[in-house]
Image 1 (cartoon, rainbow, N blue to C red):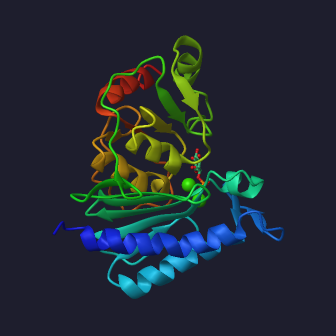
Image 2: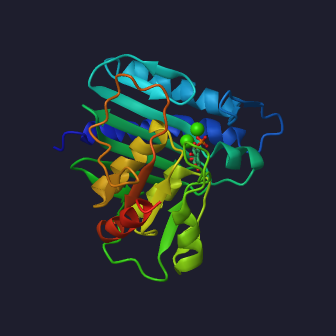
Length: 267
Ligand code: IPD
Ligand code: CA
Ligand code: CA
Protein backbone atom coordinates (compact mmCIF):
# COMPACT_ATOMS: atom_id res chain seq x y z
CA UNK A 1 0.00 0.00 0.00
CA UNK A 2 1.26 3.51 -0.77
CA UNK A 3 2.85 5.28 2.17
CA UNK A 4 0.32 8.13 2.30
CA UNK A 5 -2.81 6.14 1.39
CA UNK A 6 -4.32 6.32 4.90
CA UNK A 7 -3.51 10.01 5.14
CA UNK A 8 -5.26 10.65 1.84
CA UNK A 9 -8.42 8.84 2.97
CA UNK A 10 -8.31 10.76 6.23
CA UNK A 11 -7.78 14.09 4.43
CA UNK A 12 -11.08 13.59 2.59
CA UNK A 13 -12.86 13.31 5.95
CA UNK A 14 -10.99 16.40 7.10
CA UNK A 15 -12.11 18.42 4.08
CA UNK A 16 -15.73 17.39 4.68
CA UNK A 17 -15.55 18.92 8.18
CA UNK A 18 -14.64 22.33 6.76
CA UNK A 19 -17.01 21.98 3.82
CA UNK A 20 -20.04 21.68 6.18
CA UNK A 21 -19.19 25.00 7.80
CA UNK A 22 -18.23 26.99 4.72
CA UNK A 23 -21.28 25.76 2.80
CA UNK A 24 -23.62 26.67 5.64
CA UNK A 25 -22.11 30.15 6.11
CA UNK A 26 -21.80 31.02 2.38
CA UNK A 27 -24.21 33.87 1.62
CA UNK A 28 -25.36 33.97 5.28
CA UNK A 29 -26.93 37.31 6.11
CA UNK A 30 -25.19 37.54 9.48
CA UNK A 31 -21.65 36.80 8.27
CA UNK A 32 -19.10 38.56 10.52
CA UNK A 33 -16.28 40.14 8.51
CA UNK A 34 -13.16 41.71 10.04
CA UNK A 35 -9.99 43.14 8.51
CA UNK A 36 -6.73 41.54 9.65
CA UNK A 37 -3.53 43.54 10.29
CA UNK A 38 -2.35 42.60 6.78
CA UNK A 39 -5.56 44.28 5.50
CA UNK A 40 -7.09 41.02 4.23
CA UNK A 41 -10.61 40.00 5.30
CA UNK A 42 -11.44 37.18 7.70
CA UNK A 43 -14.90 35.91 8.64
CA UNK A 44 -16.37 33.83 11.43
CA UNK A 45 -16.58 31.03 8.83
CA UNK A 46 -12.77 31.08 8.20
CA UNK A 47 -12.17 30.75 11.95
CA UNK A 48 -14.86 28.12 12.58
CA UNK A 49 -13.68 26.00 9.64
CA UNK A 50 -10.06 26.09 10.78
CA UNK A 51 -11.09 25.21 14.35
CA UNK A 52 -13.04 22.27 13.04
CA UNK A 53 -10.07 21.06 10.95
CA UNK A 54 -7.77 21.40 13.96
CA UNK A 55 -10.15 19.47 16.24
CA UNK A 56 -10.31 16.55 13.81
CA UNK A 57 -6.51 16.63 13.38
CA UNK A 58 -5.87 16.77 17.14
CA UNK A 59 -7.95 13.63 17.66
CA UNK A 60 -6.82 11.63 14.62
CA UNK A 61 -3.19 12.75 14.16
CA UNK A 62 -2.05 13.87 17.66
CA UNK A 63 1.64 13.57 16.85
CA UNK A 64 1.53 15.76 13.72
CA UNK A 65 2.10 19.52 13.72
CA UNK A 66 -0.48 21.91 12.26
CA UNK A 67 0.00 25.29 10.57
CA UNK A 68 -3.13 27.22 9.66
CA UNK A 69 -3.76 30.69 8.28
CA UNK A 70 -5.99 31.87 11.12
CA UNK A 71 -4.50 30.22 14.23
CA UNK A 72 -0.85 29.71 13.35
CA UNK A 73 1.30 26.81 14.35
CA UNK A 74 0.90 24.05 16.94
CA UNK A 75 3.20 21.10 17.54
CA UNK A 76 6.55 20.17 16.03
CA UNK A 77 7.97 17.21 14.22
CA UNK A 78 8.61 16.20 10.64
CA UNK A 79 4.94 15.98 9.59
CA UNK A 80 2.94 19.21 9.43
CA UNK A 81 -0.59 19.71 8.09
CA UNK A 82 -0.77 23.09 6.38
CA UNK A 83 -4.31 24.40 6.11
CA UNK A 84 -6.21 27.29 4.58
CA UNK A 85 -9.82 26.95 5.75
CA UNK A 86 -11.12 29.28 3.03
CA UNK A 87 -8.91 30.18 0.11
CA UNK A 88 -10.66 33.01 -1.70
CA UNK A 89 -12.18 34.81 1.29
CA UNK A 90 -12.88 37.91 -0.81
CA UNK A 91 -14.95 35.78 -3.20
CA UNK A 92 -16.68 34.14 -0.22
CA UNK A 93 -17.60 37.51 1.33
CA UNK A 94 -18.76 38.97 -1.98
CA UNK A 95 -21.03 35.97 -2.57
CA UNK A 96 -19.29 34.92 -5.80
CA UNK A 97 -18.40 31.35 -4.83
CA UNK A 98 -15.01 30.33 -6.23
CA UNK A 99 -13.46 29.54 -2.86
CA UNK A 100 -11.81 26.37 -1.58
CA UNK A 101 -10.73 24.46 1.47
CA UNK A 102 -6.99 23.81 0.98
CA UNK A 103 -5.19 21.14 2.94
CA UNK A 104 -1.60 20.03 2.53
CA UNK A 105 0.80 17.74 4.34
CA UNK A 106 4.50 18.50 4.52
CA UNK A 107 6.71 15.58 5.46
CA UNK A 108 10.31 16.56 6.20
CA UNK A 109 9.63 19.70 4.15
CA UNK A 110 8.17 17.93 1.08
CA UNK A 111 4.53 18.39 -0.04
CA UNK A 112 3.29 14.80 0.01
CA UNK A 113 -0.48 15.27 0.09
CA UNK A 114 -2.91 17.87 -1.15
CA UNK A 115 -6.63 18.49 -1.13
CA UNK A 116 -8.34 21.42 -2.77
CA UNK A 117 -12.08 21.28 -2.30
CA UNK A 118 -13.91 23.74 -4.57
CA UNK A 119 -16.95 24.11 -2.32
CA UNK A 120 -19.63 25.67 -4.49
CA UNK A 121 -18.80 23.51 -7.52
CA UNK A 122 -18.53 20.43 -5.27
CA UNK A 123 -15.20 19.47 -6.87
CA UNK A 124 -12.70 17.54 -4.78
CA UNK A 125 -9.13 17.61 -6.10
CA UNK A 126 -6.87 15.27 -4.15
CA UNK A 127 -3.46 13.68 -4.42
CA UNK A 128 -0.81 11.99 -2.35
CA UNK A 129 2.68 10.90 -3.27
CA UNK A 130 2.45 7.47 -4.86
CA UNK A 131 -1.39 7.47 -4.81
CA UNK A 132 -2.07 9.51 -7.97
CA UNK A 133 -3.89 12.80 -8.46
CA UNK A 134 -7.67 12.87 -8.70
CA UNK A 135 -10.67 15.05 -9.42
CA UNK A 136 -13.40 13.15 -7.63
CA UNK A 137 -12.76 9.56 -8.75
CA UNK A 138 -11.17 10.53 -12.08
CA UNK A 139 -7.37 10.58 -12.48
CA UNK A 140 -5.93 13.93 -13.56
CA UNK A 141 -2.65 15.04 -15.10
CA UNK A 142 -1.04 18.30 -16.13
CA UNK A 143 -0.77 19.46 -19.74
CA UNK A 144 2.55 18.30 -21.19
CA UNK A 145 1.98 20.21 -24.45
CA UNK A 146 3.83 23.45 -25.26
CA UNK A 147 2.16 26.80 -24.61
CA UNK A 148 -0.09 27.87 -27.47
CA UNK A 149 -2.39 30.79 -28.24
CA UNK A 150 -5.30 29.02 -26.57
CA UNK A 151 -3.40 28.24 -23.34
CA UNK A 152 -4.91 29.37 -20.05
CA UNK A 153 -2.53 30.99 -17.55
CA UNK A 154 -3.83 31.60 -14.05
CA UNK A 155 -2.65 34.84 -12.52
CA UNK A 156 -2.63 35.65 -8.82
CA UNK A 157 -5.19 38.28 -7.76
CA UNK A 158 -2.60 40.72 -6.39
CA UNK A 159 0.34 40.94 -8.83
CA UNK A 160 2.40 43.52 -6.86
CA UNK A 161 5.76 42.26 -5.66
CA UNK A 162 7.22 42.64 -2.14
CA UNK A 163 8.28 46.22 -2.96
CA UNK A 164 4.74 47.07 -4.07
CA UNK A 165 5.79 47.23 -7.73
CA UNK A 166 4.02 45.67 -10.69
CA UNK A 167 6.47 43.34 -12.49
CA UNK A 168 6.66 43.72 -16.26
CA UNK A 169 5.84 40.12 -17.19
CA UNK A 170 2.08 40.16 -16.40
CA UNK A 171 1.77 43.17 -18.72
CA UNK A 172 3.81 41.40 -21.41
CA UNK A 173 1.64 38.30 -21.11
CA UNK A 174 -1.51 40.41 -21.41
CA UNK A 175 -0.37 42.58 -24.28
CA UNK A 176 2.22 40.61 -26.24
CA UNK A 177 0.90 37.04 -26.16
CA UNK A 178 -2.39 35.43 -27.02
CA UNK A 179 -2.36 33.38 -23.81
CA UNK A 180 -5.68 33.54 -22.01
CA UNK A 181 -4.96 35.19 -18.66
CA UNK A 182 -7.39 34.23 -15.88
CA UNK A 183 -7.63 35.59 -12.34
CA UNK A 184 -9.91 33.43 -10.18
CA UNK A 185 -9.22 34.99 -6.76
CA UNK A 186 -8.15 31.69 -5.23
CA UNK A 187 -4.59 30.48 -5.62
CA UNK A 188 -5.64 26.95 -4.65
CA UNK A 189 -8.28 26.54 -7.38
CA UNK A 190 -5.94 28.19 -9.88
CA UNK A 191 -3.20 25.60 -9.19
CA UNK A 192 -5.76 22.77 -9.04
CA UNK A 193 -6.71 23.70 -12.60
CA UNK A 194 -3.07 23.19 -13.59
CA UNK A 195 -3.09 19.76 -11.95
CA UNK A 196 -6.30 18.91 -13.81
CA UNK A 197 -4.84 19.85 -17.20
CA UNK A 198 -7.17 22.82 -17.67
CA UNK A 199 -4.53 25.56 -17.41
CA UNK A 200 -0.90 25.39 -18.53
CA UNK A 201 0.39 27.39 -15.56
CA UNK A 202 -0.50 29.36 -12.43
CA UNK A 203 1.52 32.18 -10.91
CA UNK A 204 0.93 33.13 -7.28
CA UNK A 205 2.95 36.18 -6.24
CA UNK A 206 1.48 36.99 -2.84
CA UNK A 207 0.63 33.55 -1.52
CA UNK A 208 1.62 32.26 1.90
CA UNK A 209 2.64 28.73 2.74
CA UNK A 210 -0.99 27.58 3.17
CA UNK A 211 -1.72 28.72 -0.40
CA UNK A 212 1.16 26.63 -1.71
CA UNK A 213 1.43 23.23 -0.03
CA UNK A 214 -1.85 21.43 -0.84
CA UNK A 215 -1.89 22.82 -4.41
CA UNK A 216 1.81 21.97 -4.92
CA UNK A 217 1.25 18.36 -3.85
CA UNK A 218 -1.59 18.10 -6.41
CA UNK A 219 0.46 19.55 -9.26
CA UNK A 220 3.56 17.46 -8.51
CA UNK A 221 1.64 14.20 -8.31
CA UNK A 222 -0.16 15.12 -11.56
CA UNK A 223 3.22 15.36 -13.32
CA UNK A 224 3.84 19.11 -13.07
CA UNK A 225 6.60 21.34 -11.77
CA UNK A 226 6.37 23.73 -8.81
CA UNK A 227 9.13 26.24 -8.06
CA UNK A 228 9.69 29.83 -7.02
CA UNK A 229 8.95 32.33 -9.80
CA UNK A 230 12.63 32.40 -10.81
CA UNK A 231 12.70 28.61 -11.12
CA UNK A 232 14.59 28.01 -7.88
CA UNK A 233 13.39 25.07 -5.76
CA UNK A 234 10.99 25.72 -2.87
CA UNK A 235 11.21 22.22 -1.44
CA UNK A 236 12.30 20.84 0.95
CA UNK A 237 10.75 23.79 2.82
CA UNK A 238 12.33 24.71 6.14
CA UNK A 239 9.38 25.31 8.46
CA UNK A 240 11.35 26.07 11.60
CA UNK A 241 11.29 29.87 11.39
CA UNK A 242 8.22 30.26 9.21
CA UNK A 243 5.88 32.98 10.46
CA UNK A 244 3.71 33.90 7.50
CA UNK A 245 6.15 35.24 4.90
CA UNK A 246 5.15 35.19 1.25
CA UNK A 247 5.91 32.01 -0.69
CA UNK A 248 5.55 33.06 -4.35
CA UNK A 249 5.22 30.03 -6.58
CA UNK A 250 4.83 28.97 -10.17
CA UNK A 251 2.99 25.73 -10.90
CA UNK A 252 2.97 24.49 -14.48
CA UNK A 253 3.12 21.61 -16.89
CA UNK A 254 6.69 20.52 -17.68
CA UNK A 255 6.92 22.24 -21.06
CA UNK A 256 5.20 25.50 -20.04
CA UNK A 257 7.24 25.80 -16.85
CA UNK A 258 10.54 26.55 -18.60
CA UNK A 259 8.99 29.18 -20.87
CA UNK A 260 7.21 30.92 -17.97
CA UNK A 261 10.31 30.96 -15.75
CA UNK A 262 12.39 32.32 -18.60
CA UNK A 263 9.97 35.20 -18.87
CA UNK A 264 9.39 35.94 -15.15
CA UNK A 265 13.16 36.22 -14.62
CA UNK A 266 13.32 39.02 -17.22
CA UNK A 267 11.28 41.11 -14.74
C1 IPD B 1 -5.60 34.63 -1.25
C2 IPD B 1 -6.12 34.09 -2.56
C3 IPD B 1 -5.69 34.99 -3.70
C4 IPD B 1 -4.17 35.12 -3.78
C5 IPD B 1 -3.65 35.64 -2.45
C6 IPD B 1 -4.10 34.73 -1.31
P1 IPD B 1 -7.08 34.06 0.99
O1 IPD B 1 -5.93 33.75 -0.17
O2 IPD B 1 -5.63 32.80 -2.81
O3 IPD B 1 -6.14 34.49 -4.94
O4 IPD B 1 -3.81 36.01 -4.80
O5 IPD B 1 -2.23 35.71 -2.51
O6 IPD B 1 -3.60 35.24 -0.08
O7 IPD B 1 -6.62 35.27 1.72
O8 IPD B 1 -8.35 34.26 0.28
O9 IPD B 1 -7.02 32.82 1.81
CA1 CA C 1 -5.28 31.60 0.84
CA1 CA D 1 -7.68 31.90 3.71
